[in-house]
Image (cartoon, rainbow, N blue to C red; front, side, top):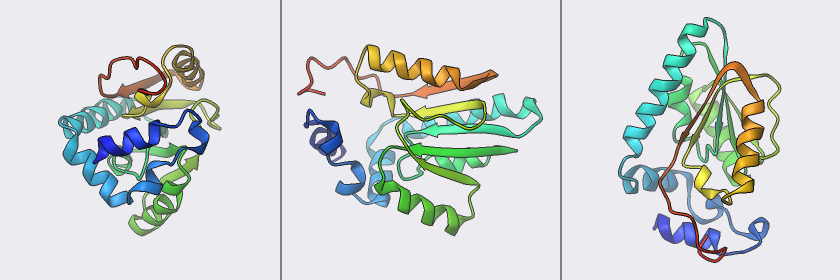
Length: 178
């Protein structure tokens, strides 16, 4: 099902007019599909949280953490469990915003949700940790990816880290395959 959604979303050459995940599937179904249909996702989630925690605790100060491509907050609550962390969850899909805001209020999570594009988002403070779980394969390969990574690097604090966890997907042959 998820592969069908990805193909449906990615088929349009004009991504601004493409449907987003939130228009095609509910948040709970999306989170379930990601968790059940991605073989190593639970292991990757644990590794991301462990690395972010190991980096954050020695800082002995409030930690600014940005999760990019957060979707319907599947990984985000686990990141909130890191001591002394302020989590900003960012996604370009406005459909996830309502769900995120309801969940943040319901679960009393210390999260700020931002609907924005990672290529242009500017965090108000230097970031200690940036987490990207399953987001980067959605970027166009080459120059766009390089610009986005440089943009993110500029927002890190001097001791900040960028954690990218993604599927190893071969380069697309053309835009239609993307």
